[in-house]
View (cartoon, rainbow, N blue to C red):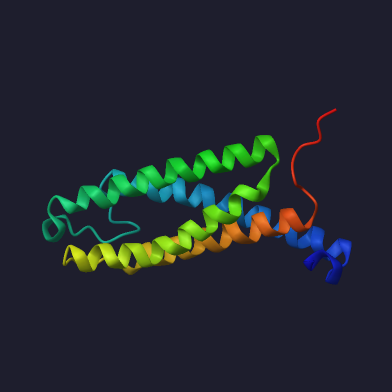
Length: 143
């Protein structure tokens, strides 16, 4: 439906920009996950003395989420089926609330940068997946 309101050239430019943004988001997630798993406080506050054993939970969670995102990225790239990115984007957005709930249940403060990262990833997945579907990339043509 969005394709009816945008001309073809505009839709191509938006798709290109969202593709660049999506690739940057995946690379950024890989870098953040690597540094976070290594214990660096470059992206997130290192409150290991405050979190105790829960600090490893947050790092490990981010590593698993990175593997999931990278798997979705590879699947969509090779199959050219971008429908998967819509639920993945919604999942990242739901994760924003879930991480706050996790902090309240365990009575620990959660770094606000987790929410910002999840928001960026969620919107990147939704924009790229939505624009690719609007552009007509349903799945690879089988000859």
